[in-house]
Image (cartoon, rainbow, N blue to C red; front, side):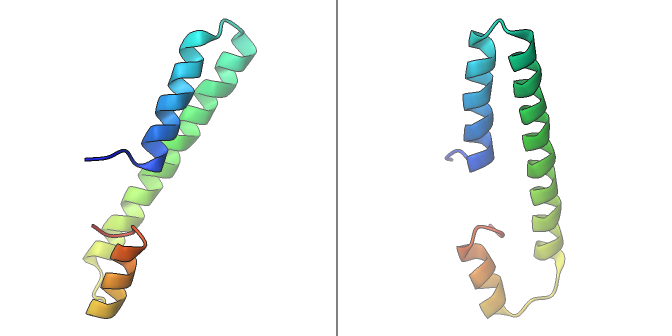
Amino acid sequence: MGYTTGERAAELINGVLQETDDDEQRFKLRTALQLLDMIQEQHEVAGQALADSELDEGTRENLRGLGYLE
């Protein structure tokens, strides 16, 4: 299974976080990771709500094509 965009962004931010000793930059990078976690969680909740909703098959296929449903 491949990376999601959010997972890849988190991996890149973590890499930079490990390489810097600047406390201000580390704070900003940790904050960015927290924001990414929030976005991923909201995406999962929205995806579950869509998966649980009664949609016609055409709409469901369109949402799968856009990456909102698996």
